[in-house]
Image (cartoon, rainbow, N blue to C red; front, side, top):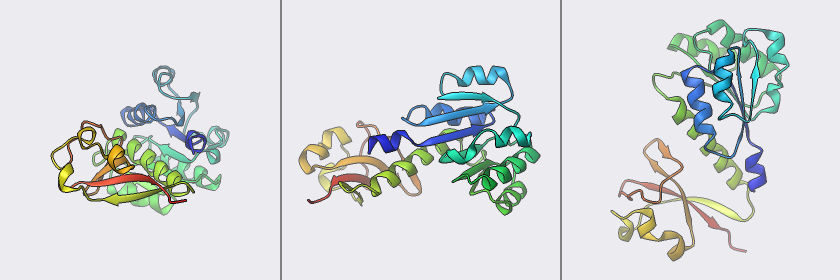
Amino acid sequence: MIKKYKNKSFAVLGLGRFGMSIIQTLSEYDVNIMACDNDKAKLKLAEEYATHVVRADASDENALKNLGLQNFDVIILAMGEEFEASQIATMIAKESGAKHVIVKARNLRQKKILESIGADSVVLPEHEMGSKLARKMVASNIMDILEDSEYYTITEIKPLDEWLDKSLRQANIRQKHNITILAVRQGEELILPVSPDRIINKEDILIALEEKNK
């Protein structure tokens, strides 16, 4: 299971503030990250966070085709200031067989155009910060991996009264009930990773991992 998780891979093209925040957050997890930009200074900064960096012009079709985008689980096209480059990269990524392409857009008009040419997801950074998007992507991968496991199951549970107003550590859920809390859902927001010192609220939905009965 851990080996499968380690093989998850992300390619981030465009290292402005949005793209850089994505690779910084992804680096908190055990995933493979390729960071791509045509700016040497930005690539130098990215070396601290990415598994490897590549200098390439995202508006150059041949350069994009040589990146092997089809080999990554998720492609993030963060060149929002260069809309034509985003369109070209989206089409090339999808034509190459990329599994999931996420593209940054500046407005709703761009969003509609990108969706019409094949983007799987379009992000408006004003609505969703790069760090939040990165955590959402990793959370999705974790859930997919564990749902395929023959040893574990994931369930959503409401907090017991005895857990309320206590931290996850104080509630001692793992020792008492043999389940591990992976994340906490609050409305549409998924909090992952979750701190053991987080206080449990009545409105929380706990994402729990437990062993399947053998």
